[in-house]
Length: 111
Image (tube, rainbow, N blue to C red):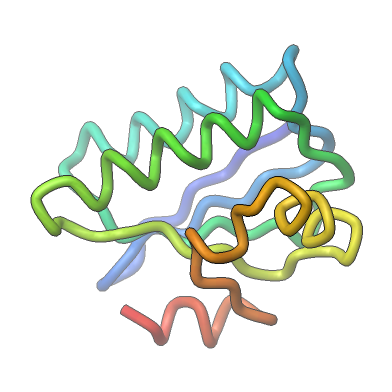
């Protein structure tokens, strides 16, 4: 799995590529923690190149959302979800916890 981060004016864009599972969830979390460590709490997660997300990846999403929303500092939003990933989030009951956008422009514009 590869993770790239782009710092924008109002938010940070984090793009993941590959599978987010028990082996790669730590690297995914570390990349997000670097952004949070810079006191930046408005994050767009681009899932256009993510093929699979496991429960370990879902835990990273929840932990990051909790951190961002603490003290009303910000939030993470999701973009470019493939139907399979969206189905996994829906099955876990996570679609109500995140704002989900069809593309990065709409997601970035939400901040």
